[in-house]
Length: 157
Image (cartoon, rainbow, N blue to C red; front, top):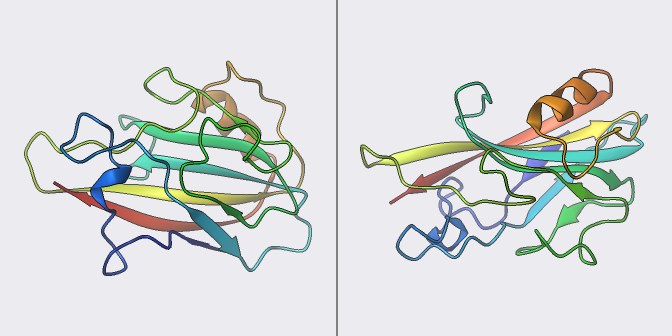
């Protein structure tokens, strides 16, 4: 399975408008994402955006569960717009206590900061709700992953 973020500059850098609004030029807009090469036993999709790629000690910026099997992308700015998310989708609470997307932020030391965007092909939908957090999602994910694809997004501010 493959995941793509078509707005990456030079195939790596995330434009600043996708950063949290406390970053100069940041507008907290969720980036567009698309995916392909889907495993045959897929019944739904899920997505995470995690700082550094590992949730322990890092911030989880976006979780979307139970996207329809018909979905192959998320449009730019779709987070928080329930009627524009794929059928069945549910955004969960991120590390900042908010439902949906919270954009990347600048590194305290300056320089680049990496985030891993992962799309999961699921063998079944997840039993999660709007108050579920990453730990709930991860527990459900263990039992349902048919495949996954990732893209590394680097914020340079």
